Length: 318
Image 1 (cartoon, rainbow, N blue to C red):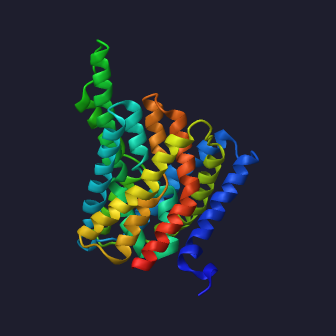
Image 2: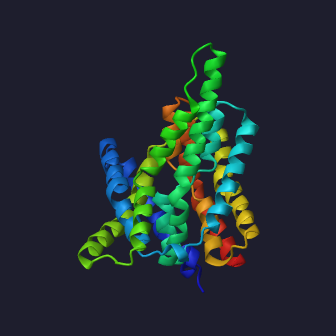
Image 3: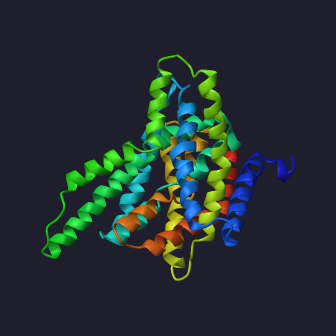
């Protein structure tokens, strides 16, 4: 088997090329900032829901393996807690720790897993995606609000109510273009009706458009990401996200007896670069915004190498 025909290389090459094309388009100014926002809305509000609903509409609950959830998120939350404890209990620390555990499963992960391991493997990704933001962003919100409350007490001000903020974060993560179509599709699948062709075909076409456009947008974002002055802390975040998390998730999954393709998909999802939602937290809490942007860019750029290494290792182990 030649190197070019190796399954890992063959699946990663289209991803790298599409991100590279987006990077070039961003550098040359072919896609303006306003267009990026509009295209992002198109991806998140139309293409992703169509793909997720159609995929989950054929999945029956009794055939769904929930062990990946029990293995993935305790490992991610443990790393989140250790990272916060290491850096200190402050807003910057929490945002940086969140960057070290929050994967870009939607924009990169779904397409990459389907190319590398087939459509059936996407179900494992969507099982994780369905509660990924719900768990990690809700926990991140609660911890950040605890930090803000402590700062308010120390400054003599009035602290916001943590439970109210936690409930708002929970609702925002649940009623979202990602978990909502997954849960809706899963509920529809239990009826056993199947999707009529007149509905299924448009959803299929929209879903097919998601992968290329999402990867091009990752490249455009990468082209607009400055690294200056933040390389060292961004490198620590990238190390946590791209290498430490997949190692911890792999060990946790092995402990749960998960093997084969589901194990590989879980480790690959953990090795994906940092997701853009972390930047929204940095904006909201007005802390480490430039560092978060730099870490996202560095994590994505280095993922071309670290993710290749992780996928190669998993192909040997499995």
